[in-house]
Image (cartoon, rainbow, N blue to C red; front, side, top):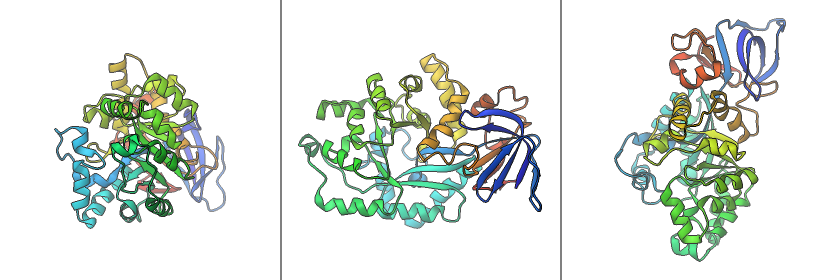
Length: 396
């Protein structure tokens, strides 16, 4: 397929190119150039008036709770989503598997229409939870990166005693990792230092919630005399999620350990838990990506997430974030978590792309393409979505 006359956000810097050609071969971007000539028999598509951007990466989701949208909206975070006592866990355990599967599938379809081609999901429920997401996304053109979890948590007594993971659970973790892409750890306050170090030995993706609330930070200090983030880093995570209450020292330590951060500002706001200081994260040299978090709390819409982050950061912190930097968080920066083959339009990368209507009523005139996408774009401005070289939503 040869795409002609398209505008493009190119490469790792999302450089705007007004008119260019892109050749797609199988599921990859083969060549990008000004005057590419069509090969014999090649499909040629004129994309005058369209802006081609990388498919969005939703870097933190909990799609399993799609069945529980807006239940108990006035309760606090512990009552809603605590991994042991939360209402969410009760709902998941008492819901019919077919119903869970159906609503997860609906969330995946919703994401596709909004230009999300990859999601990274913290999947509760052990292997059965993993299999539910696999069944739900089967046949849907979206890429679920599944971080599994064994339903085992340590109490405060075990954490204070620095008790290791029981031998009886080792085989459960090994079996879990054979069935998914990595481990999504609930948080440092559910595990001892010894247990967190155990997770660090596994070679697949490692991620962990950290410093989401002031209370969770205080619990960590009380139990261990260490910050939640300092303890989270014992697991040697590829990325930490939330970091809403991470200190400057914590962020510098994250940067030193070459771990990334995934922020979920709308979910934090909906839970009345504050807003992550993304400016401080960037100043510390952290790689920052964005996720939409629990579907029960928040719609899986990265356009809304980017718009919210841009405006609330300036309103609360009195410092400007550039629209390009936020768009990079949803594409290029998130690509770092997955090996760099998605989320960037460049030769040899997987052809996951969104085609935006440059002349859409909400976007035209598009004086600043990055700003237009971050705080004006929506599902209605998406002409088409490409996944692995195939148009899977809309038409060009």
